[in-house]
Image (cartoon, rainbow, N blue to C red; front, side, top):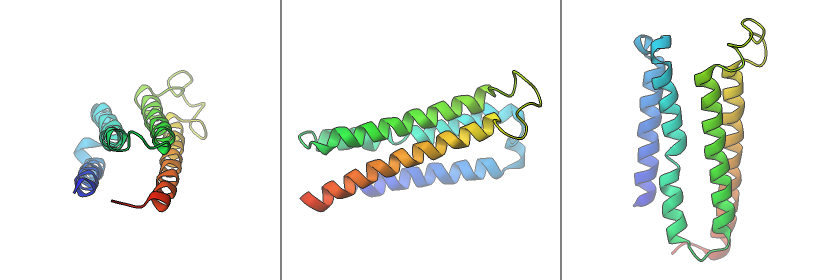
Length: 135
């Protein structure tokens, strides 16, 4: 049941984020912080299933490895979002980072790193479930 709750929650958040990003009225700079909040909320939503996993699998040795990967994912998402919100380094030297090194590009690099960390956690989890099985 929890699998459907977590997947349903992140799917609803993702759909809301996509609708928000596609809405012309919310594309202005005035809503930049709101869009950043949506990205952070999606990234941090993983804390809920991680805590659940932490309590359910308390005595499993793979638990710590998975949590380290998931924490790395959260830190990557938050760091990327901070670049997106603060517009660093763009605002330091206007026009210098238009082609490469723009805050939005840095944001996406951190999102990719977070996705790779999540993938690493999934590999450890799948290997663990392959050895132990499901209840």
